[in-house]
Length: 148
Length: 148
DNA sequence: TTCCTTGCAAACGATTTGCATTGGA
DNA sequence: TCCAATGCAAATCGTTTGCAAGGAA
Image (spheres, rainbow over the protein chains, first blue to last red):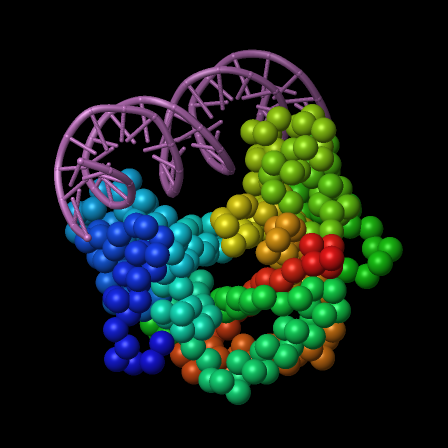
């Protein structure tokens, strides 16, 4: 998404077409995710929203946003659910996971590198007779602050 | 692990050193995983073992095997727990996930390709000040049978 | 005997759902 | 008005745990 593009109208449009609404709590979830450096757990979102959105409503907001393709659910290595903006909003990215503090941050890689990655992935999948539709790379490491 | 190497003694040894035992149900779990083409959910394992190992015992067996590093827990994109043999038993591999039928299969990639992958990963992590300790690549695609 | 392991049932934590109520177009 | 969204409490699902019984060294 190019900088400066207003995404609210696009999101609202998706909700309209689905016959549902881009309500206040759903807006708040999107805003919180936009501010975050990486994916968040439902519990973290709950805290960030000052617990003003009850958990059950938060889960429903996440479900509604997932339904219209605005957010995506992932899971870290230990199975914890992570919510993030979908790639058309956040851009294609990968995850860097600190094995020490557990923080997950988004990382975008330069186009030429991404091209190399794609070709390797195609190569691997072709050998198994798969047609690639997407990929995900999680890099596990130790972040600067945990290392020092 | 080179073919023909008996792994049972090595596993038994790990249990011995831990002061625990390589019991029948734990052996069955390992055997089932060795037969499978990829990781299995606890429920699938339960079925494969003809439900002879009660779920709670199965979970305890998985925990014990994880404890001694024989099996590893992962999670698919939808958060479902997957159990697989650790890499020293199954070899370093990645996962190919069929977006249609959901099956996950292990895939080993040739050494030269793996080297290319590692260097790209190091490159990405270095840019963010991370020290790499591991990586995980999940390729999402459509398998041959779901495509035809 | 001494621990480890097992099976059952109860407990748990995360997520979902039923239902009555509220709210926006 | 009408239908979607909300809040609460109860239900559900996968997983874990307490406890008493069974089993190997």
